[in-house]
Length: 158
Length: 158
Image (tube, rainbow over all chains, first blue to last red):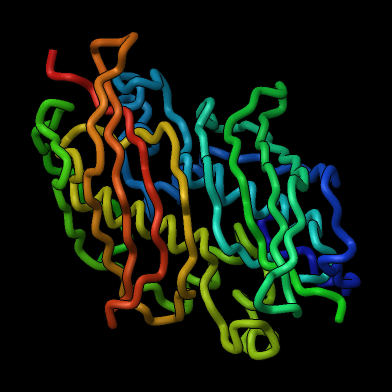
């Protein structure tokens, strides 16, 4: 996929009332090249296991792997491109329970799935609410790399 | 600060036995320029509020703000550069309770503090254990942007 922003076309917004528990979104895919792994690591996570093949062989991973933060960032990109809430912006209130099950490797193609687990109107602010989601990121072999939960702020239709 | 990897000098590793509850690490600083905000957003979070001044004015933020994922990535960079565990690599088992208190703005200079909240030997694998930490990221005015908890895998001295 392109690494530039591609979601320029107008998309209708989705509101709190449009979402329900069990809603499932499957994203497209994103291939994490060696070059992308290196450029992210140089900027945000400059540890030898992400930058240097030889040093990575001596690490607990035994080979060069991408930063876990990059797997999370790529997951966000996948979900943005999937228009999870249509034209409604994705605004996170909190994330939780982020678990790293397996590292990402150069050339891995990632996909994510997002399942709505709760829809919660705000008690104090009727113009918005919260939507809880379980987010799973897998590689092309179907191996789960990262799981996490999101709580997004979503406007109501009123 | 430089945006290139700077921690090339050898640093002695720290082990599980070297860490105790209450240990506090204050990092250096990282300034998030408009250019860095844009390049991260183009790659990982291409939403209008991170890319376009005019669209951002119509968003809930009222101005252009950086991606929350970038605030998290910058926090990692700060902690890596602070040699939190000396020469021991930072390997995350899980992260939790990530809360976004305030958005990051172009030109903000970030700092992080990391406090050890638990040191837990592994029951099944004596060669390693887990260290839980509370991580707080602030801007130059001392405003808290993000709080989170980390559980890192740390080798024992044996």
